Image (tube, rainbow, N blue to C red; front, side, top):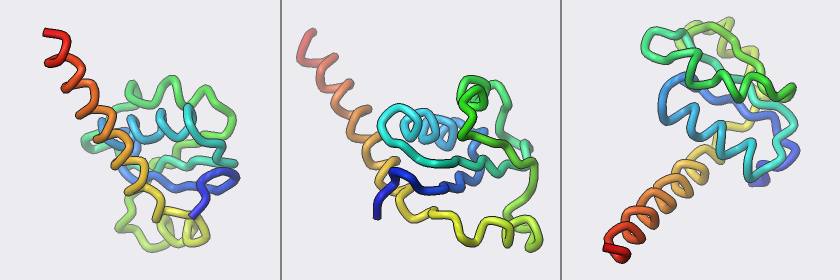
Length: 103
């Protein structure tokens, strides 16, 4: 699945993992649009402050459990998210090994 040019929905995007994934998407891919769907119960706007400066990124305050809200995004791609998380994890591990190798 190609991320470049895609419209991507990131649920819980104002949390730590979601916001980190958005940063990675913006840095390493060329999505046409990213919509952050978050009810802001646990997430923070501070986590996505920089991302929201990008014109491709919009925030929808809502709950994925609300059918009318979630139906708005049925045509968005959500499947590639695991690829982003995997890349984030690989970088995290690589950084840890570099730290131990340098010590």
